[in-house]
Image (cartoon, rainbow, N blue to C red; front, side):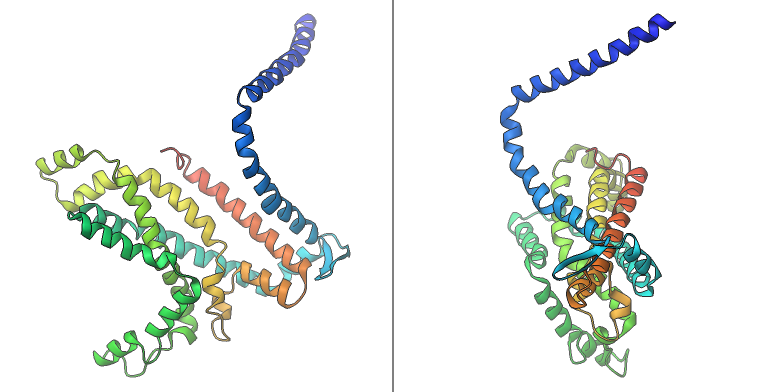
Length: 315
C-alpha cells in the first residue's frame, strides 16, 4: 500500500508536466488564433476587469473626486445596507428587471412569427424595417416620443377623453403608479424589433416539412405555434432570457430620463443610485459599494438562472 501511494505521488507531477507540455504544444500550433484573440482579451482587461477591481478597491476607501483618502474597510457597506434608499433602489431594480425580462423575452415572439408568415418579400422587408427602427433611436428621442403621445393633450388622452373613458387627462409621466410600467413598456418597445429578428433568424432554420406534416394532420395555427414553433425556439428563448435579464439589471437611461419628484421612489435603480451618489454627491466610496452590490446581485441571479436553465446555451 505504501509503495502504491508513493508511486501515485510521483506520478502526479509527471501528469501535470505532461499536461503543461501538451498545452504549450497546442499554443505553438495555434499561435495565430491566440494572437487574434489577444486584442479582445486586452480590451476586457483594460475596460472591464481593471475598472471592476478599482471599483472594489474604492468601495473600501473613503473616497471623493480627487481619489481615495484612506482605508475604512466595510464601513461603506454598512452604510449601504443601513440606507433605506439602497433597499428601495434594489427593489426597483428587481421589479423593473422582472417586467422587462418577461415581456422582452416573450412579446417579440409575436412579430417574429408574423414575419415568418408574411409571404410577399417586399412586405416582409418593410415590416422588418418598421419594427427594427425604434432600436436605432436614442433614449432621449424615445422618451420624447412617449412624452408627446402620453401628454395631457397627447394622442392617448385625447382618445380616452373622446371615448368617454376618462373626464380628466391622465398625467402618465407625473404619476407614481405609471412610472414602472412606462419604463418597462418603453424598454420592451425599443428592443422588440431587434429581439424579434433574432427569433426570426432562428425560425428560418426550421424544417418546413414539419409544419406541412402538422397541417396535413389537421393542426390549426395555435397548435402549430405551441407544439412546433415554440419547441424549436426554446434554446433561443432561454439564451435571450439570460441576455435580457442581465441587461435589465443595469437599467439606467430609460429610468433616469423619467426621474422627477413624484416618480423617483419608483424607478431609481441601483445604477442610478451609484451615479447620483458618486457624481452628484461626490461620495465615490458609497457609489462604488453600491456598484459592488449590483455586481454581486447580477452574479447571484446569473448563477440561479444557469441552474434553472442548464441547457440554455446549447443550440
